[in-house]
Image (cartoon, rainbow, N blue to C red; front, side, top):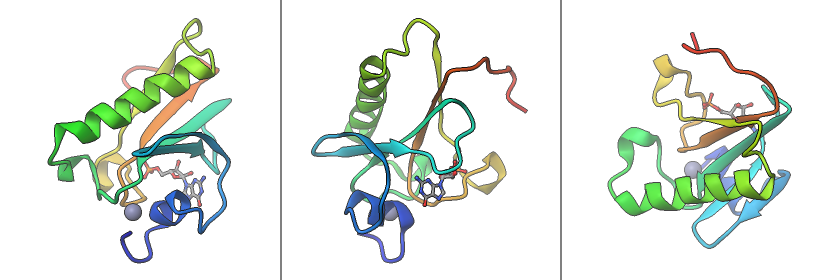
Length: 113
Ligand code: 5GP
Ligand code: ZN
């Protein structure tokens, strides 16, 4: 675990979160400040600072595989859903541990602004 990383603490269950999915590599939990009726964060358990720091394709396979699995389990296919990764401060990343936002339950604009 990376020292003082909020999402590492959630992955280690040292901090509470509403966990909706977990496997050996990935954990998914509800966002504390939801931007849609469904707002889940999907993270690798192993610390990776951002999308720019991913060195192994396996990380993407694990992460996106889990994200689509969560969408299936929550039955989001019909209404659709959005997957978002903010990489770096200018893109809106505020927590420096790689995470995929899974958003659903309302319409989304494009471009996102
Ligand atoms: P970012 O802006 O880095 O792409 O997304 C970070 C997300 O983490 C935000 O949507 C924010 O609401 C969420 N978040 C920040 N702190 C916590 C926390 O302590 N618990 C949970 N469950 N979500 C958090
Ligand atoms: Zn971390």
